[in-house]
Amino acid sequence: MTQHVSPPRDGTGKAAPVDGPPAWRVQLGRADVRTLTLLGVLAALVLIGGITQPDSFLDTRNLQLVLTQASVIGVVTVGMTFVIISGGIDLSVGAIVALASVWATTVATQEFGFAGILFTAIVVGVGCGLVNGVLIAFGQMVPFIATLAMLASARGLALQITDGRTQVVTVPSVLDLGERDSYILGIPPLVLVFAAVTVIGWLVLNRTTFGRRTVAVGGNAEAARLAGIDVRRQRLYLYLLSGLCCGIAAFLLIVLAGSGQNTNGNLYELDAIAAAIIGGTLLTGGRGTIVGSVLGVLIFTTITNIFALNNLQTDVQQIAKGAIIVAAVLVQRRTASTH
Figure 1 (cartoon, rainbow, N blue to C red):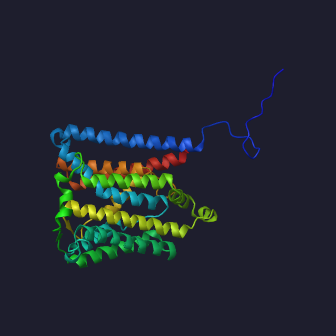
Figure 2: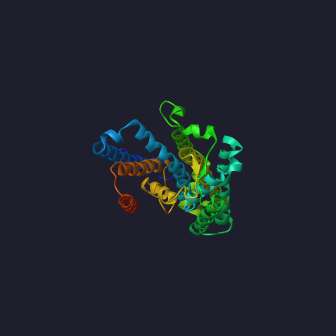
Figure 3: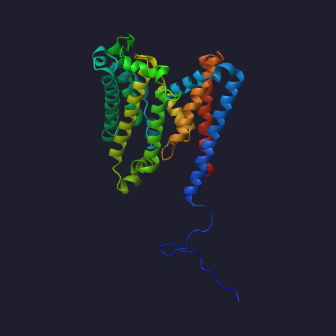
């Protein structure tokens, strides 16, 4: 006599699904595939650089330079990733970096030394993020329009402050951070700051209520509102976060360049968006990873370095970046349609 075995039941008394892995495991699997793919691309680029310019590319100083250059745009990209996951966009990050860098390097600001420069850069970045957040969250402006207006305004104000001149930093404690004597175990301080921002960003996105709310707002803002999430406040916080990252990046750029210029941060918005996209962040919102975005930054920075070492023209480099962006978007669409 055959004994009938009832299917397992959940807490509601309904039969629990027995076929297929749980949703979280599927999502984790997709993330692992994307991460491994990006690591493969980065490894291929390192191999190409090592083959084409073995003496220059694999030199310790050059690798330190790549990581240092990646640090500035990388910090901006972490903030941009949060904004895009929420379904928004920030076209003003490059202009905010420029404004923060020139405001923090005026003669009056430099009189307050290291702390004055750092404080001013962060305050200006957060202030611009606050304006963006208020216009978008409470003024009901489209993020594209609001941040585009900030882009124009911040660039104009940066030009007005500098009058087109380069503002040289004369504070030794700031300049010393860019010297090799300040490296910790061979790692530049700027890279350590980037690593810290990355780790904190990952923890916030994946281990806090703030991160879960960000994903929820990006996935379905109305459903998030009905679930009790204050969508407007969340969006305000996200643009404040983006502004904070821009302020930190501005200070890193001041250390790296030893000056403040109104042309700083040129096209940072495009590089940050591109890095987030190839890292797996959906432009429509609701999904994204900090690790993927950071790998995207490293890929673009490595490409730039390889092109520079091989004396290839900038226009070819831009074409290559454009092709990578298009390929990444097509892969995203294909992945979305198959799942």
